[in-house]
Length: 215
Ligand code: SF4
Image (cartoon, protein in one colour):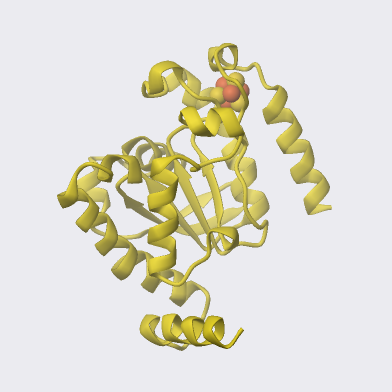
């Protein structure tokens, strides 16, 4: 049931013409990952590589995201990843409010289907949009980074964490350090709590290493 609903959603996104972004896209990028993932990552919009391949976070920012996930013992294939808008804005400009609004029902449905315990908003646009979807007042990314907040969107309830977009950290070592710190400290801790793990992060990573050495 869940997977056929999901397939319908993907088909709708691939054929969508609800906002002008459909005119310049090569492919819409619905998102990917297990539908029972406890954590969902939400970026801003597809970039050039994503638009060409139809997959989220496959360019340079995606490589950094993969490294960040690995650094806390999560596999890319084990988490659900999507964007606020599913089609690439021309020249990678920010999506306009009307485009975000037009695309928003798809994200609501993804949240309800995956029903993650933790959602990580990557960057200002994702943070602001998810804050507003949760009925929370948005100030700025520095304020939002300070604490995880409880959110409900439709039938989904989750903890929302806001951090920087990996693309912003690619050429900014200071931001990259802060992003790595957010993954190590807040994202790992809250995800592990949500998963009910009793081990520490260090134990978990060491365990993963032992398992991969043994195989
Ligand atoms: S960005 Fe969203 S609303 Fe706009 S055309 Fe693409 S899928 Fe449809």
